[in-house]
Image (cartoon, rainbow, N blue to C red):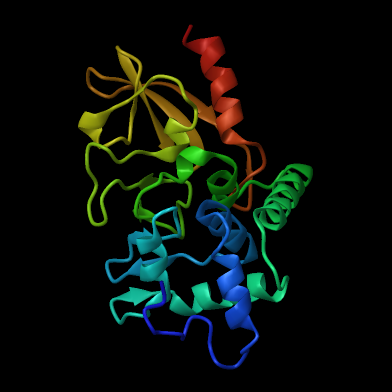
Length: 234
């Protein structure tokens, strides 16, 4: 996985090498979630829009652990990994699951649901692919992104995870997975709302606003959308 490049672990904490080996004997999906709880470890390429996170595919971790001049955020990944390795000598799936459960419970207690909460809670946000995502504007619209099927580009198999995780309607392959098709109308996800529009001309028909505080959801938007859709679409 490291390919001889040990910078991600570093020589400053030699005890972390044994811990690293122990960690990566665990489930990769759980590692990805636990690491995100430590810190936002994603890396972004030079176009500022295509991001790398960990997945069940070993190549995603190879990409994260091999520093490149074409990608930004290596230090963020290293810091998050150091925090995770600091907490345990012998890792297990059970240990990682406890980190995840405690994090989700804390978010729900505080009613603070950042994009990372959804990534960790809902498996549709973590397809078993390359760990690639596309954000048009990560800073100002963190809830608007796509999970990619390929390593490089949007395709008919990519999708907006806030729509797919609702498990209703039909993800529109013709629209590269960014719309939810309900026949005569469709739904798209904006940073603070779900918007219903008519296929004929795109006129807005309805809108479900998500309550936020300082740009962060204060309610689980996926749960709210599913309940709202059941009341309004059927």
